[in-house]
Length: 336
Image (cartoon, rainbow, N blue to C red):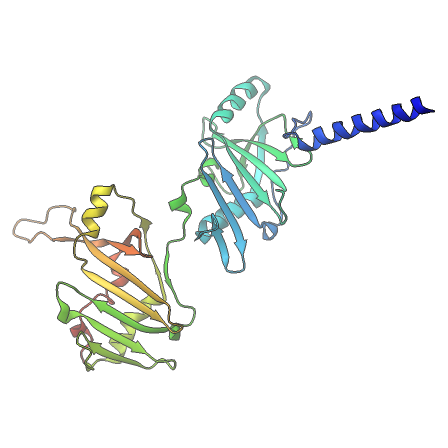
């Protein structure tokens, strides 16, 4: 009897060890290929995690206020929506020929990106291994893994309906390119209580616009004195602030960054929200680098399209001048 009990205990222990090893090991390679890459209902996608072979990662999470990036920034809605469309519309174009499998897997091992797709919970529902493009650039080498099942032993050439090209470039890990370019957003424009423009090199051009909770506005000069104005002109100037984007994040070298920040800004714009929140941006015109004007015509000093800006205290960005052209005009532009 004791020997039977001992044998039973040994088998139980060995079974427990086997279960523990299987549950804590990495993904196993399946004998059968997995080809159901698509996510039919992308409204269920709650998180997208992208990692490359160099250790760079992008973590996109769905929240009640939109998608976040690495738990710190807002993500670009258009770029996230492009991923969701890819998840929904991806399709297998063909299996990789047996003669090319080894080469495809070797190249993928060196350069592929891992894309974890979560549909709620802490475990991804699917993991894409997104590799390089085919020679004709009409397909992308991909592998599929399903946590709890394992990883496919066979890569596939995948594409997307209505799209010609490779899919790998959509799953990049460049933080600045995933970051939202949103600068100002006011769902209710009456939440903007004050707009203050300072022009350090020409103080008399500065002004302050105040708006009460009912949307009535008043205008003051740089000395705080009331200024006669045309309501239509002032409203037309500040209205674009309801939705303003910058063009791109600027990452200059230390010398150029210091050169920009140590110079006097052309404009300083301060927005005060109804709840007391204050946002300030500094703007510097970029030197003109365009074509030389015709003979006898003056050469512009500044780029008419783009300017540099310091926003969120430390972030340098490029913004298009026409977007803020009416806001940055001198106070004299609001005269009746």
